[in-house]
Length: 384
Image (cartoon, rainbow, N blue to C red; front, top):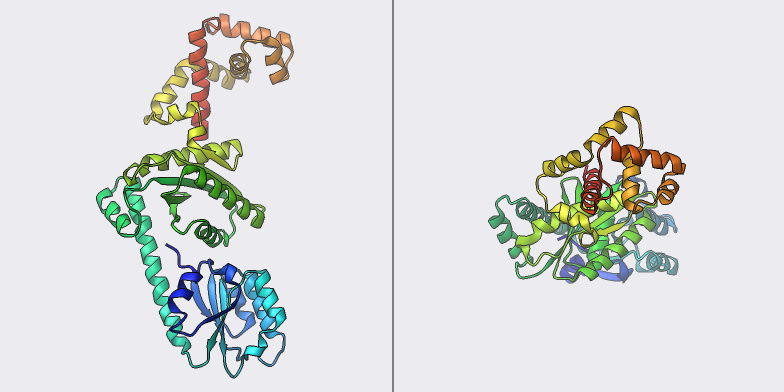
């Protein structure tokens, strides 16, 4: 579910007399924890997503301490700051410079009266975070039960009771990532909740999974594209690949869509493409429906095994030559250009493929079977 700062503020503003001074654009930040900070030098312990509370007891002697504190908190990706107005922090300490700083960074700045007990608000927020974490874990476990057909009836009941009805359609996106920094996951969660509050993000096997109820696929594609652009702008070294499965008509069809999304993500990574949809995988969609990988491997061995073995043993180029022959419609000139070989070399290889290995390349049906074998071989490489 993920606990947003907006939700916390709306539910507790009157109880703790909270006032939002500026930074409203950042209220969709995800709150991971509550942290009381009176010393700017403790910022190294921050991991991102914390809501900070300060009384200013350690820094009020310096006129610039508050702006330096806020700059540090923004740099460490905290989600907001509550100033406990009292003997150490005055309302007038919130200068125009500080307001401008928070507005530019979309950093929520709150004030709270001195008579509010910090122990009360922190205990309340800890309880909310704990409950929200429990709920989010239960939802993720329920999706796993459904996707892998383990106690699916129980998983269905849990999801329906947490706002995921069986009557809606569902979109699934599988994310594969490499070189992800520590802040990647909380930033991703915040972006998803900003894009659509019902998106659920969970870790599934070695991937991240985004499950979106009740939105059309074109909206899902647009959301994932926007999310990827934002993440890559923030983390330039991040390698991120997304795959989207076909639309699931109900929760019971999620499993099929999940494995399609995994295949599409593998295709995206193989193609060095940021996003791939299962519906655009062409012939690979048919191969995906073959549950027994050994059937595909056997077909490749039957049609191409002799050439594969010969290339591996003698370092010849018959596999590449035959593949290009099928792609180029038998044009020796095009094959030579594609493989950077002399025409005579290509003609010689084609003759050997026909005469010594027994491939009838004048038979259209045989060429179709060979083309299918190459497609299967590529598909198996992608799914490694």
